[in-house]
Amino acid sequence: SFDSTPRYFLDADRVPYLMFCLVPWVKLVLLVRDPVERVLSHYNYLNQARRRNNLPMVSWREWINDDMKSLREAGVISNRTEEEFDAFSGSKREAAAWRDYVRKKNSQFLIGRGLYSIQLRLWYNAMDVMGKNR
Image (cartoon, rainbow, N blue to C red; front, side):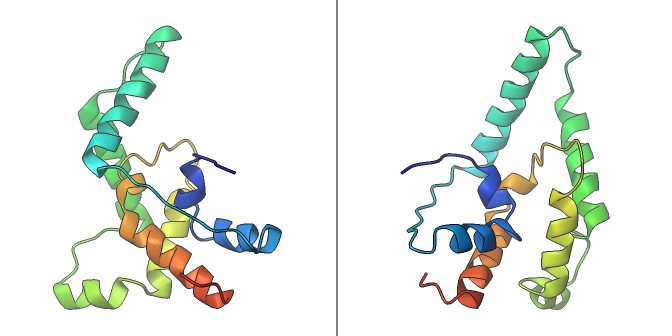
């Protein structure tokens, strides 16, 4: 079976647990695209939809700034030293910050969708907790 819903990967703090409970035999293959190409494609797709529905276009700068603000407010990104970043990366604080970010209403998670390392760490952690091979 095949599914191409990227939201499953984005919701990395809860979907793996649900998926492995529902279909414990599942084998997963994840394909990701270049994060810059992905964000440009996402922006163009949403603005085409807005055009079709006679809605105003959203500027690239506004869109990027809004998502960067969301990432900062959730605590996913901040001005950390290298030591602080190393301590944060893979921590419970990072998982909580990611959860807060992806639960934000009315967001397209423009930049966050391309932060693959965070999402992979959460998936790997869930696999370890549930005794699944990686």
